[in-house]
Image (cartoon, rainbow, N blue to C red):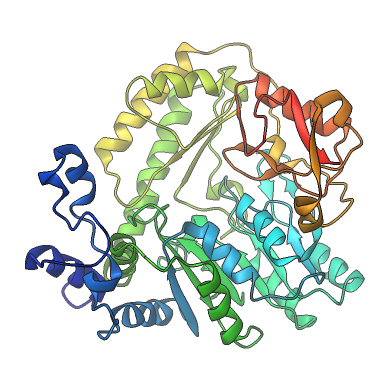
Length: 477
C-alpha cells in the first residue's frame, strides 16, 4: 500500500494474523483448523472476523468507523457503510430508507435482481422507465432526462428514482441531467453503480454517481477493484435522505458476523484508489483499448463497442464487450473453447461476450485472453447474421399487482402453456446479466414466454426460476 494512505482495516488484518492469539470467540475454526483437516485449514485459517479479530469484541478501536469515514471523504458522501453481502444487500438496505409500503418508486427496468427483491422487502410499488437500445451497437441505453421528467410529472407522489448505471454492457447514463430532473421534484436519485467503483478517479472515466449529483449509490469493490467477493459500499448524501433511515436500513439487512477479510479488502481497495487510482486506471484503459484494437483487426466482422462510439463520458473505458453477429460465431461455443483453456468469461451468450478486465490484469493476461479469442472466433466463423439486442433489454412488463403482493400470494406451478395470461409469482432472469425478464406481479404473455424459451434453447442459463427448464412457471393461485 502507498505509505501515506491510511488503511486501518488492512493494517489490523495483517496484525491479527501475526499475533497468534488464542481466541475463545466465534468463528469456530479458531484459525487452527489445519490441525483437523489440511485442506479445510487452507480455506479458513486466514479468516479474521471484525469482532475480536480486526477490533476488540466491543469494537473499542472504532477501526471500521475510521475506514468508512475515509471512504466517505474520498467519494464525497455524508454517510458510508461497508457491506459484506455484496451490492445485493447494499441495494436492499438503501431501498428500506426510501419510502413506505405502497408508495411509488420510479425505476429503470434494467435493475438487478436484488433490487426487485428489495421491492418485495419494502412494499414499494415500481413505475418502470423503459430501457433504450442503441441503433448501431444494440447496447442498452439509460432512460432519458425527458422520459424521467414526464414520468415524475405523471407520478409526483413518487418517493425516489432508482437507476442501474452503468449498464452491464458498459453504457453510461447522463446522470447529471437525471439528477437535475429528479431534484426538480425534490425526489432523491439513487444509483446502483455496482459496476463502476472505479469511476471518478481518472479524467478519462465518467464521474461517479455522487459527483454527478445523485443522492446515494452502491458500488461493488469486487468487480473492477480487487476487493474480496461480496465486498460493497453504500454511500449517500443526506440532503434528501435521512441518515437515521439509511443506518436503520443497513443494520436491518447487514450480518452481525461480518468477515474481516471482506471489510479489509474494501479498505485496501479504497486505499489503492486514493494513492494510485489515476495511474492504475490509466493503465487499465490502455490495456482494454489495445485489446479492442487487436481483436477487431484479427477478427473480421467483430465489433467491440468503446468510448469512441458514444458521446464523451457515456461508456466505460474499462469495459471489454464483443459483438459477434458479424462474424457468424456463436458466443456460447467461443466461451466453451476458452473454458477448456482455463480462461473464463464474465458473459458468453450467442451474440455477446464480456471479459472483465481489472486493475489486477497485465499485458500478459490480456494477451492470453485475446490470443484465445482470436483463435476461437475465427475457428467458429460462419455466415454473418443481423445484430440483436439482448432479451434483457427488450422487456415491456405488464404489471398486474405489486411484487410484494405477488410474492406473498398463494401460488402454484402451472404448465408453461397454461401460465400465459396469469400473474407470475416468481422472478425469472437470464444470467448473466441477471436483469429480470419476468418479475413477481407481472402478467405472463406469449411473447415473454417465447423469449425465455428461445433463450434457454440457445444455451443461456435461466436463473432464479422455480423450474429452470421452464416446463412450468409459478403463478399466483
